[in-house]
Image 1 (cartoon, rainbow, N blue to C red):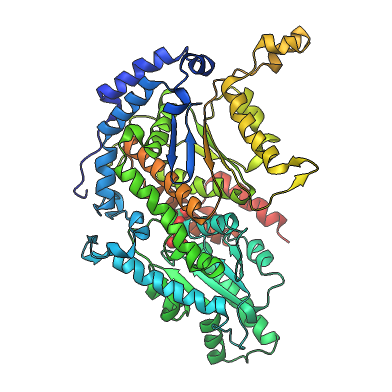
Image 2: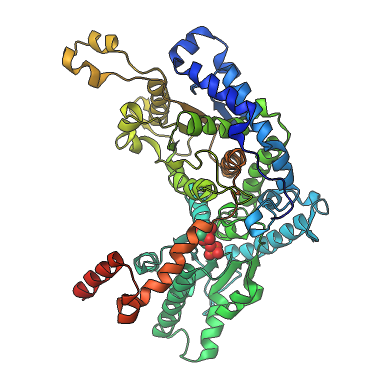
Length: 561
Ligand code: F6P
């Protein structure tokens, strides 16, 4: 194992024992009572980070909970491990790699200050950024031309997981800004995805970005070949190029660029390495939207927006690194999540953005959090000692209210939830006298209030409800939420939000002793898919399968048209 300290078993520490004892006392905790008892509660549990305001007061915590959780975080080494991380220690032990996504957003003035494994990381980052900005400018200005001399109107970005979820989420989140080109994102290996995304596109004005850290990912390479075939076939059919190999290679040079750490494979695919943008093994896929993986965003929104995005990340990195844990809302949110997972046995965590532009944010967070912390083994290879990795999920705005909130309000599970909203909207609208954004924000506030304070049987009775129906209309309250309120959603605040959840994930992973930066759990399925696929046609391959897989393939064979 690389030279990093072994994780401690947090469950055996005095800090954990203190929390166990405190948890017993908290069984009778009531948010309603806590608010009544302490007029200072909201102030004590409110925080500001840049233009984001955080209210943690509707969580099941007291001063003692926070003090005990902070002590646990310190005992688990949250501060020292973060320092190791940002200084390039190989904390990704199973892959023996540094974990340096924070270097991606350091300013150019930091060049020379972070030499890791012989590499001036910040200098390298800015070299690639400068190349990306120059390339994006050429596309945006119309200087970059397709093979027939036409300017680019649409980008098709092909990638999956970390090479897709971040860019597509950010592209959607910033859609209120002007953009130079439209981007369509293709990820699923299901040919339906590419087929739908290519509909109506003219290859002469389309630029394809193939995004893959490894450039070996089955889905991405298959989709890239499919889009390549579409591009060449359509160009030929339109009479734009002849059928020769030289014309095809020329068309690929004009219409395909790549983002990868594996530049040899990029060249093998036929993409000119001069049109490839690299990043490094120390950037995990799910931590890479601020690396070259964000190229489509720069092409769409421009350099200034991307710089603002990076500055938003950096602001949170600096805050997290320099703010004492007891005042550090990023650390506290991670520690409070541990409190719910390990003591209240919460199995999931909802993230509920009250902003339609953030509609892909929960999907993005699912990879970030669950690929990072969905693990049963610690960073030294020993088994975990407590529950890890809650399920993150969510939906934007009031849509969720009309779908799954019933379970959050009255179900038998506790589901901590983060509610995110912004004071200002780019699309104000008045419905008569009613400002609709205020109506929306009224819902944002109403939900956390209902979850925290509920509705008693007496209150239900006072509405004249028949006695037998009273229990069905009671809201227990005491259901924990965190409110995040920003002044507006923009590239900077989006960078803030992503870095916030990156570090929340780090805090939870550190307490649990996890290497949050590997993802071995996705490998077996990939291997088996390779082994199973021939069995659709090959009897010998079929005979090697288990009974269930065989039966399912038999069904396929019988029904295939
Ligand atoms: O799902 C596994 C995974 O390795 C992710 O971690 C990664 O983001 C995704 O596949 C895509 O990988 P690549 O960028 O190498 O194509």
